[in-house]
Image (cartoon, rainbow, N blue to C red; front, top):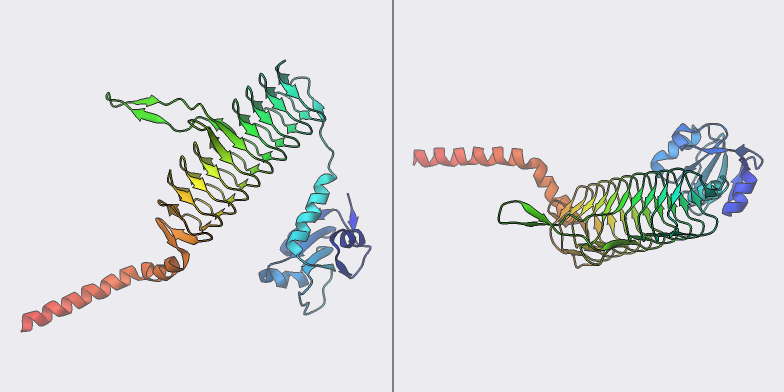
Length: 346
């Protein structure tokens, strides 16, 4: 579907500089812009591409100073990045909506299916499971017995949701993710092997949660593993049993949270972060990529880095010395040698 600059500007409350009738039908990065696409400029590092891009329309911030002639039509908006997100959401809404139940989907008789749902081929809906209105269940999805999928939730191909798990409204779960697998619970025995501890709890995803591809969220030993409203998880993330993640917290890929750890709301975790079990993280904490936490953080909004992690500012100061350790050791060795030589002369 094509949109003119005039229509886009009206939708975004933007101001046009250039041809209002130019049209676009796709999106591109400003550095690789093509004719017939719309790009955006939010990061000043990419400003040079504004004068080189072949994109037909570029979104820019209202206060951006254009230093020379551009070949594209500009639309000035309050926030170019947010405006692009709104535009992409509009574009997404134009796609055909999948509805109906495929003839080779398997739905147990005791399951409850809402209105205007889509259930794709080879999906399985278990006994006493509930799929609410407007949900979309793509091919090869497994919904276990007594599990619930909320209104408008989208479950992409190959997702497995084990028995008795609860998925809220408007959630998105990407391909290959498993919700409700057993937590890692084993008790050592005298014979030096391990006895499996039954995991009898479940997983609860509240509303508006998005889970990336190939994640694993373990069911609780008892009670619930809880992902609160608005949480966003990247791909390849492991959430262990009885973890609780606060509202609107976000995590980048390959992060792992050990059992019974509690994260506050609006936290931000970089990629490959690891947290040990049974600790608590305050609201608004930011944890830099590849950091490892082994203790509770009580200070709201604290920024930490390192393994074991400590204050971000202290880490950056310390890193100056980390990098110089070989040279510092060489200096110390040289000083030791000089001292020993002086002692020998006495």
